[in-house]
Length: 316
Image (cartoon, rainbow, N blue to C red; front, side):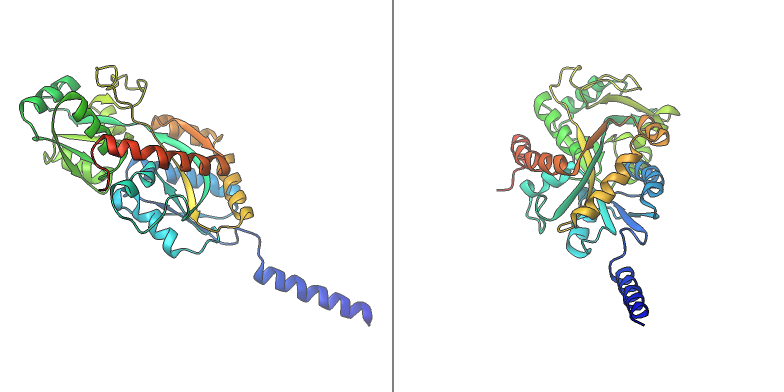
């Protein structure tokens, strides 16, 4: 009789553990992509999510939540999502710049749990194939002769693209007209429709350039990419723009949940299909462990103040 009671008690304990302490994850995980569908970020995360869910053991549901120069998604997550690991988001370098430019109701260091650093963007300056601008020097010459009339699209104010172009303008002694959009897709439509003259964005333009519908005038990194367009720096404007990104969750996530997510995505970074999409988008790998990513974030937040100040956008 005693043995039966012990067995019954053990069964009840097991049932309670299963009900209230299920191993993470026990249901699908939502991954917020803070940009519209169709751009390079969306393409990247849909492929990464497809691979990572095999290691996570649950589906990864991609949710596009654009706006706020890439901060609407992670900021809303930080304020509304439970820190249980079932809602995570991409976080870009914009998070460490916007608080220096305007008042925000989130903190980049204290409102997120840093999970893993993933990759970085390759940035380029593109025009339509029929544009009169055959080179980046043509673009600067036009801007010099027509102050404030050369319109360029970016995915938002305060993004790396916006700041890079403002720095180029300052160093080249010209004025551009910045036209911010919610993401790559809207900017591409504006470019192809003739509403802006130039688009400055990450490699969502790759297929258009490969197909001959757009011309890549220059890239903003420290070396040439697979399209072999010159870098802005080698053309005489001393500017290099890099933009690494990773995944975060709301603050207060349990360490074991962070580790489970980190490990699943880390295993995905060596998958041949992942490496293929990285090459397609010409994005540099940028793996950071959870601890290293958090340390990098603190350093970047401090460093970005001087960047914002240099281009004249520091909050007064």
